[in-house]
Image: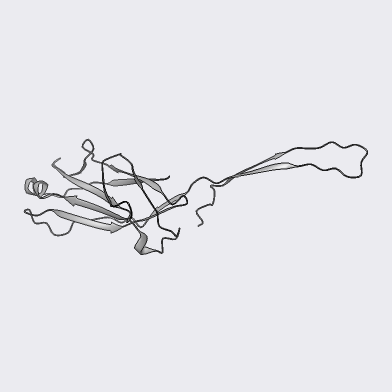
Length: 167
């Protein structure tokens, strides 16, 4: 699937010329093509923290493919269980563990995300098929030692949604 499919809008204005009694006539028309900036987000997988040690923090990280036809993009993350601007995982008994989400596009450095607040990234993957793995940004989740020390036994869950817009 090409990124442009269904996203190109073209308009043509036809101007007619009237010429009576001549053996030829000319007319001109203007043609406009508007291609909006395009963006692609892929390779986002479920994330798990692995082994839990109550005295230590936890982290999980993965590469995500972001491509933008304008090369730059903004990114916002949303937590299903947001607590203000914080990200939160919730257990069945409503116990909560706060965690941080950060983004590293490889050029802007590590940017900590807040629920619903966009950050601007400098560059996107250079190929729309995302075959350049070295250029893919990193999504990182961290649970601090203090949160782990206070967490009750249980299974905590959250869903993060990422919104990417071409800049």
